[in-house]
Image (cartoon, rainbow over all chains, first blue to last red; front, side, top):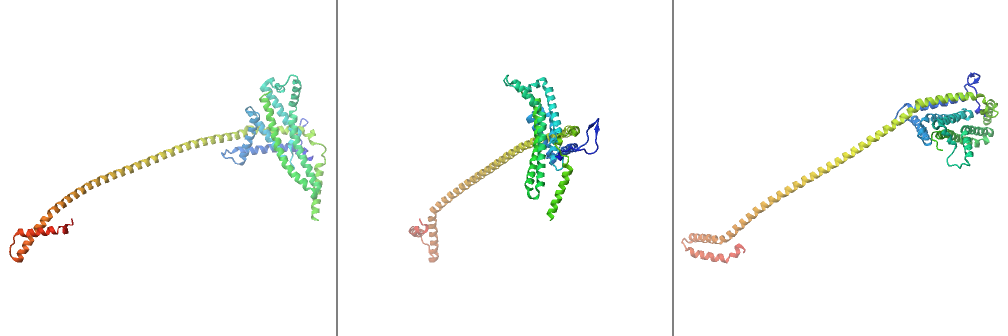
Length: 239
Length: 196
């Protein structure tokens, strides 16, 4: 599990006994952010009618995310486009960078995904209360439910609402960690079985690499689209 | 021998790496709270930086580009449609022009032909009339000639025969007797000279 270890890079930085040293995790967060900024800056400087490759990439991602938001949260979700876009790109690039050998996967740490999910949860709740006032609590009371069942349903709804940040963060973290652990296990099999029997697990790890790249994209997409759905609940109260 | 050497080398490298990295791997590093605060701090810093730069500077530019392209393409499509309609109108104008000029040419040709045919007809009629007149005159002359010719011939015959006789014999013979002989002969030979 050494690939998940966090270690200090450079000097120890402390503010009031709180350790905020620069670590390998911090390094990969910064690298992902910088790569995103460089790619999208390159994709937005030129204004060609027929875009070049990098401009096409930037514009395709733009319309992909904007379509995702308008499909799930409608036109009211437009002000949150910047955040959803940054979130999707950050998670995607952290996942993808983790696929490089010897790289650190930022999203394989529960604390990172939990902070993101908790921020989304608090933000969505605040937006909901601002938009609908106390009427936002109607979210927990679905219409058309018999009065006898209502206490039970409300309890279930509240629990499911409160478990959103946990499910959101654990989904991403567990997927990333499990994928990397599995690849590590198969890599270990290749070494321990040697030249004679190592070919089968080697093939498996090649296939797993492809699968993990798919998972890296898919989990970023799921993370972003669930954020959109939560946002939709807060913006358009359907219950 | 060489294969075994490579294998040993690989195994020793692996052993070295696993000693360096794998020694302290006890449990999940994710649950070790030692660097949690640091990770949260750097996450907020880098993600916040990314969010601010993207949404303030880069995303507006991209959406601007997209809208610019959309509007330009729409404009181009509009001008293309206008030009298409214009060219269709011009093609129609051209076709009507060609049809008109074809009709005019046909009319000119027909008129010219009619005129020429009329002219020819008039001239032919005139000529035919003249020819008819001349034929009639000639026929009259012929008829007259036919009528008068036997008498004249008879006269000539009597005169010449009288002179011949005069020169031959040296005596004048009565004209009436000679003309009687000539008339008698001409009656006999009438069919021979005229064929009717």
